[in-house]
Length: 360
Image 1 (cartoon, rainbow, N blue to C red):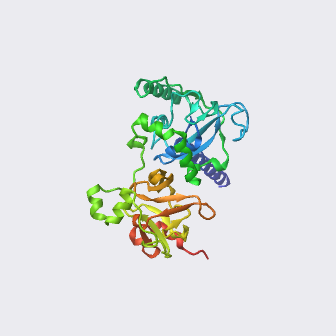
Image 2: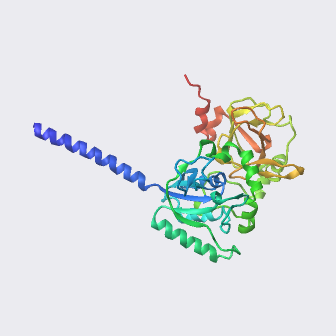
Image 3: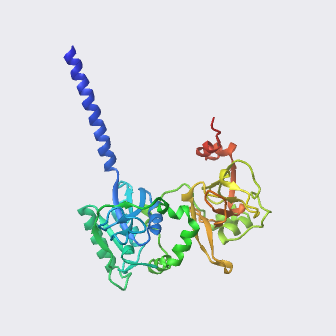
């Protein structure tokens, strides 16, 4: 009996180890890595982070020989600014990611990218295996034959080497400092170039877009659904009167969603009295539902705030807000619908109830 017990225990241990190893192998098979360089890594994170199937995007330095580079010396050590992307191959393919990559850069510039010139800003595809190398070379060749460019495609295809993660303040810079990011991006000339080359079609193929429950209705339906003021604000970039709107002094607990699509945007937790007469927030509830762009109307340069799914004009964001973000999202009540905490469950936003549950 003792021998049987020992055998059973050994079998149990072996089975446990086998299951652990199987789980590790399975997890590894569900993710893969690509590395792209396209100039300033701030501008290369955002296009990939919102793709369905992308798990993580990290800014960093690679391609050089010097060890442990920093932002101050990575160029001297021969490194290039790059992003390393972890993705799920069952949801998005390497070819899809290549297609998105080409639409973010000027592949004809060997000396850098847009306003950033120097070897540390040149474009490159770093392949991690032979299959990636083959697909990258084929993709580059097809791009050269596409007729999109009147110069040769010079983007390098290089074997991947050690990737050094950049300093924390560089990660997700477009979210942490949206105003400065948009100013930088606009002044770099990147968007103007991409618009010219791709006819303003900078989005990845539909197969890689996130599916969403939040949709924008057609224009005729919008006119029926919205009040004249709501339509003017969301669809025509209008502005409602200060101190004479629904939510400028609303102090109730709850969340604010897009009046058109219902996508969650901001929370009462981040709302504050800015003294401007419009509802103001220090940060979004769901950053992925917020898009910012340069607005040069009225002889001013500002950063407009739009909803990601409905493309509604919400307001503007400024850098004169309180800590910790230093931002002021100044919005129009007419672009929002407020859902009090007691109605979150029945309205389909029950996941946000935890925000207003007091901890013991």
